[in-house]
Image 1 (cartoon, helix red, strand yellow):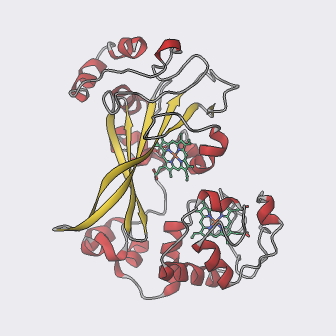
Image 2: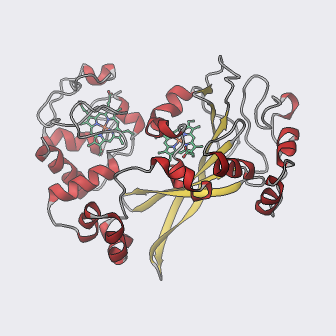
Image 3: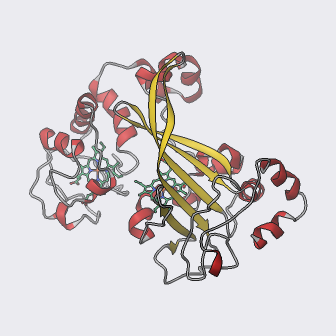
Length: 337
Ligand code: HEC
Ligand code: HEC
């Protein structure tokens, strides 16, 4: 509290923070006894506690809707402290002590006058990142790459992550260039946050809002989006879009470009675990599976099953449940050789 309090007292920041904190900005924390002076959520040994009056003391900075087969599956709402928003707008960076909280909620929907509209229901989990520019806790596995990384059980508010390298880092690799944070989705952070916007922006899905708002969408983002808005009827073209939605965060179709997952260029017909330069799990590299259309469909329907113990099973456990979408993706993988 004291450090945050004194930083907020500095100059022009006071007025802005006071405005954003209209609902009250009291900070309190579960590990108060042995706080590290740098953050009110962190103990001297690097344990990370959940801010107990959350969301009091935080401001909402942006949200994500993650789609599943029936529409929106999860809504993720992201919060920061007012001071972090001010600092990012001024400097383009998260300064030491900055806190980001992502609240993951189950989405439920029904037919509304706007269409099928989904809203945030029960909280599934909270993720929290605390900026640490000084490598304060080199031997604590929750700390590294400039941040403390934590996850909290929504019922007990207990910290449940054990190691950020295995629990968090892989999925944040695409945001490495922007200090591991997907900043472009947070309008409150201002133009500085737009430095790393993805090239392959998807605008809605054909059956949802995109068609209705198609005119404006197509003008803004060009040809790729036309495919989405108009539904070309071709499985391969549709498959490219569906691949972008479900697979491209981990897989590239450029030969040799390995990401979280291996490049899938030319995957059809080859033996599992053989893309050059990619460090496969033992499960996948020792597998005898050949990537036929049938095996591809099976692997993306239930990523844990065809090759038990492979890493995609843990990272993408739900797979693609919609048979039509699976079919489109497989067509695309077969054609794009
Ligand atoms: C399955 C992949 C995945 C895992 C595992 C994961 N994250 Fe994330 N995280 C993301 C993605 C993607 C985003 C942004 C989009 C979204 O929310 O879907 C994100 C966003 C966040 C945000 C909001 C700020 C930002 O970076 O945009 C926080 C905070 C966060 N994650 C913390 C964590 C922590 C801490 C862990 C580990 C305990 C973790 N994440 C594990 C994929 C993941
Ligand atoms: C969250 C990350 C993630 C997502 C999303 C993901 N994958 Fe994967 N995928 C992986 C990882 C990691 C591996 C390597 C697994 C291993 O080594 O155990 C993999 C492996 C594969 C393989 C085996 C490739 C080879 O060279 O043998 C195929 C095929 C595949 N994925 C297809 C897909 C398709 C199609 C999608 C989209 C429907 C998809 N994946 C979505 C992470 C992901």
